[in-house]
Length: 312
Image 1 (cartoon, rainbow, N blue to C red):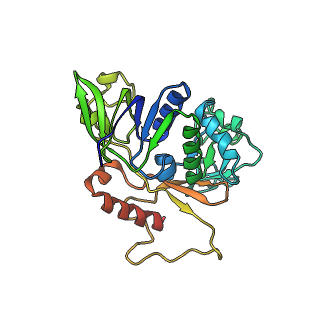
Image 2: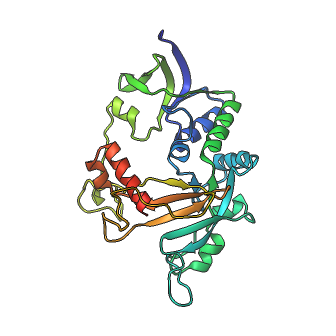
Image 3: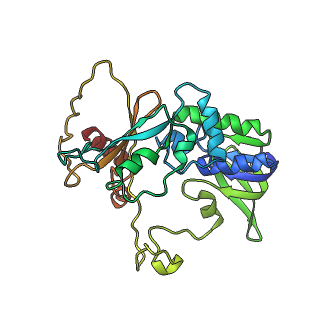
């Protein structure tokens, strides 16, 4: 492909939640924006990885509310949830109401405003009444979310969107980024660049200092940080969707997958959240700890997490 050079006010790389917010905000303010995304549609983890839930108090009243209003125009695209059952809550006999974790369902009587309250609860185990009354989040269909966000970006009239494209090279001059070479051969330049990729690809190419693991408390004065740095990272999960079957049943496990938990003493908890169409989003907390994940290849980790999900 011939090299094309396009100039923008802002170039955003990565169309996940952060990239979408940055591109929408800048383009609505009149800036000429380019949003570059490596996947075939926008949305990041919210659209591609099953993280299609805004927890209570997170959504805010700016761009997320605009997205919510657009989703409301589509049948079964979005809903507000309430806690139905939780393993921390006991019945009158002292037995957990839902040992696997949390059962969270769509509540048709709630509005977006109900999702903005969280502050005031102590712990979920000793404040059941407060949690039931005030903890409500937003659940949405991932692909419809991607379509709605794409429409909103185009409606600004100021945002170009390039999909299935990554950044191949960063061109810098005098310790500043001047332009990017994309995988389709285009050369694009801007006054400002925003790296909204999942692992800081642009920053790495530029040569910025990158950090991994946990920094010591002395680095940023974080009260909960360890005294000495280490390589501990968050656990990972394989979020999956449960759909209605024609006949309710528990299917047999594939060969070589035990019925009992084999990687720790007992199965981890899981958050099970109902979609607007009554399917369930299941998030194991976690399916695998970070150190184990880093010791495996991506395919090995996926296969092992899938087996753990089936067993659960």
